[in-house]
Image (cartoon, rainbow, N blue to C red; front, side):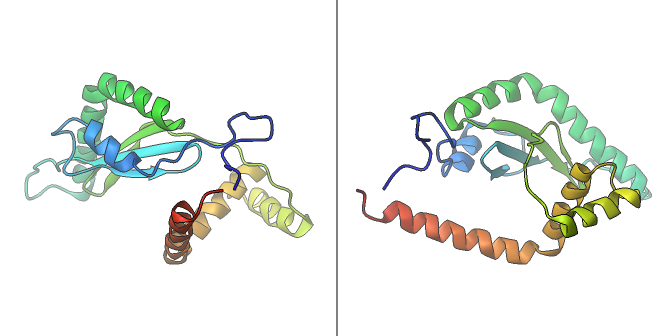
Length: 184
């Protein structure tokens, strides 16, 4: 069976597998940065690493706005203090897995991604689909068809999380079977 990661001319088409990325990253992240191992999400273009930070201690009478501000401050402090080290780790990850790296942090109810990839996606749409996007633009929900399409994808993601999770699990099972199958 032909390796799908290579195109006809022999050039790289897809990045190498990143099955061990979460474990490798957990080992590379310095102890004490996060409460537990970071959450690692991998796709074809990017690896996102989000770690949970300890919540700041606040007075009992702190408002929800105070709590949100304290959490944002904790995330910002972590971002500034770890910048150089995160850049070094990201370079290693990018070399190993051939994907861009985005870092983020979560604290309490607040989560922030520091930088992440905005990948262009090309698609052909027929008039009924274009009209959906144009309606969103005309109504001011989005500024462009591109933004409207991103809005639609986010909406589907929010309302179909359980189904998408099941689909990803099934795809992982198929990929595992492929790996264990005979080679040609």
